[in-house]
Image 1: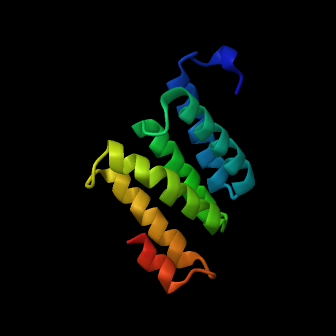
Image 2: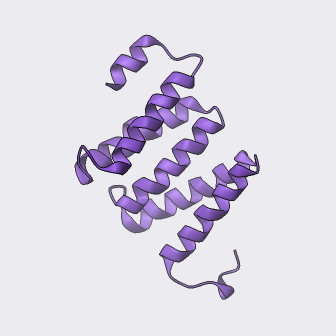
Length: 124
């Protein structure tokens, strides 16, 4: 995105980039969407920290794209080792975003052809 036409506000830039990544994913261009989502997530972590609600939301978008791309191990690692612990500390048990993270992890575990029953039990 050419920043001279856009706001200098980081939040607006991240939102616009996330919308672009979503459009790419909808068009089936998952690899391009993943590159952009990884970049957005890394920049969010650097600017807001891993436990910020916006960062967790960007991480959720990345995890969903990883599942859609059948990169189950990467999605499970991101969700269980980074996003869910941050969401537990910051958002609480019943927050909508935390429930979406759990749902995405369950989907990754369920869809993974190499997943085991033990993986599902461990995620509880």
